[in-house]
Structures are given as C-alpha cells and as structure tokens.
Picture 1: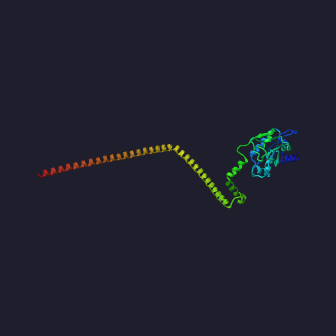
Picture 2 (picture 1 turned 30 degrees about the vertical axis):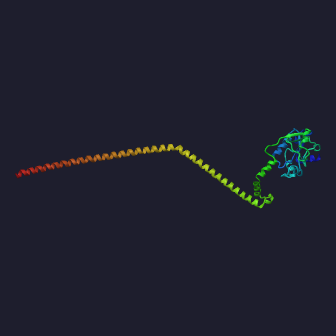
Picture 3 (picture 1 turned 90 degrees about the horizontal axis):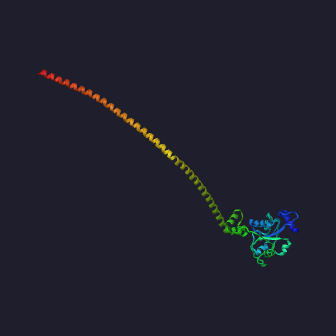
Length: 304
C-alpha cells in the first residue's frame, strides 16, 4: 500500500478524483494492456473503465518489454516510455508496471482489485495457461466490459507507416537524420533523395499549374462579365448608330435635293436669258434683211 500511495501522490491523483465521498472506499477497477504508441483508442477505453461506477479508482497495468516481446512481439516504445505515457492520461489514478500476462487471484488480492475492465473479445493466452487471459476473472464475476474504438489501434498505426515507408524515410532524411540512423543503404538513400527532389519538383509544377488555372479562371470570368456588358449594351449601341445613320442620310438626301433644285433653277434662268437674247438678235436680223430688200428694189427701180 505504501507503493500505491506513493504512485498516487506521484501522479497527482487522489481519491477525490474518483468522485467519492470522504471516508468512502472507492471501487478499485483494474485495466491492463501493452499501450504501445499510446493513442486515443487507449484513452477512450481507460475513460470507460474510469466511469464504470460513480466512485472508481483506476489502476492500469502495463506489461514489460520481456513479457511483451515474448508473447506478442516487438514494440515501438520501450516499457519506460509506455509507463510514462499512461501516467500522463487524465483517467489513470495509478500505473502498475511489470503487470502479469494472465491475471490471477493472487494478483487481484495483492492490489485489492474489485473489477477488471477490458473489451469482451477473448484474448488467446499465448503463455499456455488457458484459452483466454481473462478466463478466471470472468468466471468469478469480476469482469466489466468496455468498447473498442473502431478505426484506431497500434497495429493500424504501424501498418500506415509500413505502407508509406519510403515517404517516412524521405521525411526523416529531410529533417537531418542520416542513412545509418534509418538503417538505409547508400544506394537506397541516393535513390530516395532523387525521388524526394522529383516529388518537390512535381509539387512546384502542380502549384504553378494551380496558379495559372486560377488566373485563367479570373480572366475568363472577367471576359464573361465584359461580354455580358457588351451584349447588354449591343442593342442600344446598334439602335443609336442606326438612328444617327438614318438622320445623317436624311440630312444628306435633303441637301442633295436642295442642290439639285438650285442647279435646276439656275439652268432654267440661264435658258430664259438665252431665249431673250436670241429673240432680239433674230428681230434685228429680220429688220436688216427687210431694209436690204427695200434698197435692192429702189436700186432696180432707179436703174430701169
């Protein structure tokens, strides 16, 4: 219990965190796991365990590296990192390191555990002690079910990294890690760096294409606006032009008509003057002819 008190004090968690009244013993609920790459799926499971009962003190057991690597496989985080991640979860009151793979009566009695919380899926006992690591707890009625969070697990996270392995290697190379840090050969490093350069070039080209596309859209939009303005004003402009053209043609026709009439009047006036002059000349010539005939007659009369 001294270790328990020390752990509670170290984590900054006290009995009042469980929501119980002073002097009332909280219900001690235990949850265990590996908690590698601690994520929100883990946190939600621990939240459910914490909220199973109104007054809960949540103990979380975490298996060490030796036991985990033996029965489950290699972890990304070592045991100390996994313990520390749990200590920073708001729902955890106490972390129990070096937790057993299979829960026994001795372990329950030692930590005064009232209930064990976990999802209801059977977990095969790789140690060979039984078919399900929670078989004993379920048999004595101390098992409380929690729900898994779909779409997130440590295995899923590792699968994402493996799926895009080269991208993550390139990412870390760009951040200053060496090929020795990443366990990459010289040839592979050079190939990845070339790919990284090509990818950056593709990204720049893509951004440039997007900028050009945006400019084209702006120009097209502006041209469309101007076209719409022109179409809206086209009828008015054409009608105004035709009106001005018609008015100009009318004025031109009137001017031409006036000029023709003036020319006709001028020609008629000239004709009248010519006729008068012709009549005078014709009258004078007839008179002269008459006088000449009279003179000839007088001459012949005198000669006879």
